[in-house]
Amino acid sequence: MTLALPTPSAPLRIGTRGSPLALAQAHETRDRLMAAFDLPAEAFDVRVIQTTGDRVQDRALKELGGKGLFTREIEQAMLERGIDIAVHSMKDMPVLQPAGLVLDCYLPREDVRDAFVSFHEGGIAAIPEGARVGTSSLRRGAQMKLRRPDVEIVEFRGNVQTRLRKLGDAVAHCTFLAQAGLNRLGRADVPAQALEPEEMLPAIAQGAIGVERRADDLRVAEMLAAIHDAPTGELLAAERAFLAALDGSCETPIAGLAVVEGGTLRLRGQILRPDGSEALEDDSSAPVEDGAALGAEMARRLLDRAGAGFFDWRGA
Image (cartoon, rainbow, N blue to C red; front, side):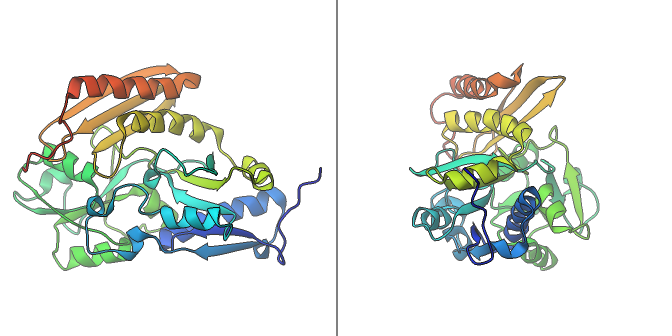
């Protein structure tokens, strides 16, 4: 059967959040599909869908219900057939999709590192004692408190422009962004210093874009297969299995990174107490095809070491 490709009169509808980064990722997905099937831009319709995480900016993410804050409304639109595919930052994605949806297409992964952003000279070591560090990420906050117990973590949300304005207004001394986002936006002007994973292990799936679809849409499945990056899929299989076994959410500080070295997959994992008072880490390797099993087993080992109540706040 000949694949029925989208046309300007019947375009493929791409759902996305409305931030500059989300739109850049949706356009990258569109451009890859255009190239794969020799289609014009008019054969695609990028539709912005506002999510709870975008709409509510004055509350911490953990107060709003954790992961899914940036995906629920988009996924609902797809289930209601208002859009055909959804483009997501994979670090925002829950490990389970709603019934009827599938996530099996990943674009080539960008830079995985966190970026330290400040208008002041020096990196983390140069942060003044007691300074305010702005972040909405429990992982980044806990990692900072682990390394610098003296700093104060303050809630810090918004796009790149908003965060830079807050830094200029001295709301915080510094903040963090994903280096991948800065790269995709072409924001070389941002005063950022990329942090190696040895210094700050990144979020699960950071730097990766995922494209979600309806399970029964075979046409879309075939189209997305043409742009799927298998090596990225192998890495995320290990990382997301690690996250799934930990029951990770925006209320649990978890970091992890898989890389392939010489044909072997290496996975580094970290869990932290929310107040940054303790961190447990693991570093293991396995054949690439066993990445998911490696991630799940690493999670079990860390949970055994952590014991009950590890993710509870101590109030520090």
